[in-house]
Image 1 (spheres, one colour):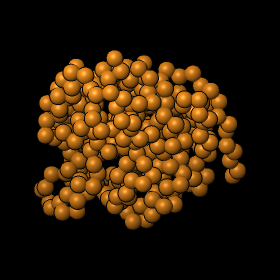
Image 2 (cartoon, rainbow, N blue to C red):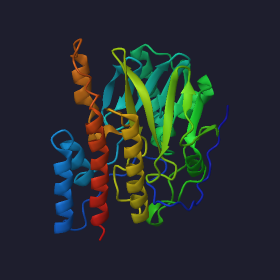
Image 3 (tube, one colour):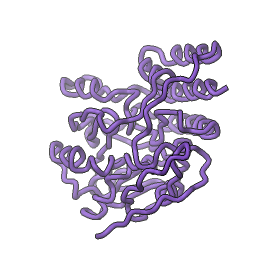
Image 4 (cartoon, rainbow, N blue to C red):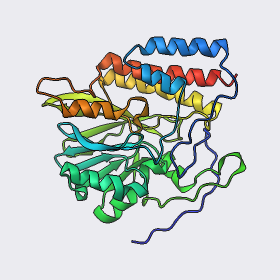
Length: 328
């Protein structure tokens, strides 16, 4: 099947978006020293984070950075009875085994399909031809870039929100008067994700939650996983703002509202597992090392507990307040 590249068109959206075709831009140094007010907010975020989320608070409040093509690969690993992780330190996908085939969250960048994604399937003993469904966190190319390959080769069904299907087809112009990056090859328009409409594959069901802010149609997902036969609830915030610099004030306010919404939905669902598609604030490698040495009865390092999950989202919110306060 021949695919064409779509010419970038201007799109008026409620947030200022990072470059369409690339990973989130690296953070710039602060333009000025933090004010006493900002410093106080940082300390409050660190206090709320405690020891468990100290790295997260430092990342979001003080040292954000975008994911990079140079982020080192991580070993493809089965982290739950029905879930495996493939990718690198900055960007990962999660592959779920269901009774009707494989469901994958995100698909990495197009140039990572042959170098990381397909080799990861091989190392896990999984067949990529069994990927029936791909669920996207949001419409940036480091998430959807690999999906055309799976559509063309395996007939995978692609789920993206309506707003981000639109974003992908009509990317915004480049920042600061620069030309937009060349548009990547897009998947064929397929299924639309909407909050309250579960995505079901066999015995597995995913609940989407709308979380605009990073993009107009960013989505979070709540879903069950099995850990040594026990069902637990996991969540992925699919529109994390790693670098707030390119995002407008209004976009950050929208993001703050989305975090509050997601926090409440994950509380009601009793989520106790953090599964991020950009895990820079909660590094994957130390957890993979614990998985390799895990003995029967040892805790799963991805299980943080319900209270800790709520704190994880709260720290994201508090650091968003920090980044908004820096602009005043």
